[in-house]
Amino acid sequence: REKLLARGPAALADAELLALLLRTGTAGQGVLQMAQSLLDRFGGLAGLLARGGTGLDTVRGLGPAKRAELAAVLEVSRRVLAQRLAAQPAFEHPQAVKDYLSLQLAALDHEVFGVLFVDAQHRLVAFEVLFRGTLAQTSVHPREVVRRALSLNAAAVVLAHNHPSGLAEPSRADEMLTSTLKQALALVDVRVLDHVIVARGCTVSFAERGLL
Image (cartoon, rainbow, N blue to C red):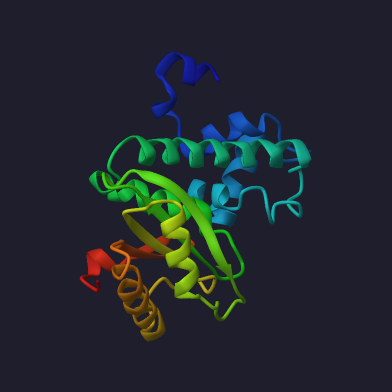
């Protein structure tokens, strides 16, 4: 705490920042050691926060209060990114789009398909998970995506889904689904700006790959 006040938060290592949130360690393990152990176990701050408090109940010394604080930090991060995307054109900050989608989807252990709906200036209108599936696949109905885009008066969309397997590489089925949705949405003058696949620790953008 003294180091943060004297030199600013940027001077602190990840483990030191996390230790400030945790406040106390356990018998035989100081708070800084506990923080570093958590970062090693979950793949750094991004991996830990992506859990959103889930899957942490088995961690010794991480009780309900500490899990709630970590979940609160995640939600604050989500809301900050959402406000940023709503306030200015999303594709002026493509990394913010990927960061936001990672916070929404990376920690899930089942596959979901979501859509970022944006207005004519490419500002965020809403993000909604429209379909939920199993570890292997999810059923996406183009008619429902079109209907929701029209109801929100969206001018464009960013498609997104997660790969719980941990591999973000697009499959042939992902490419075919993107093409189908692009054609369906074009009929109502809604553009598909991107399709982002999210896995723990990585994202793949169809737009960046030239797959749209």
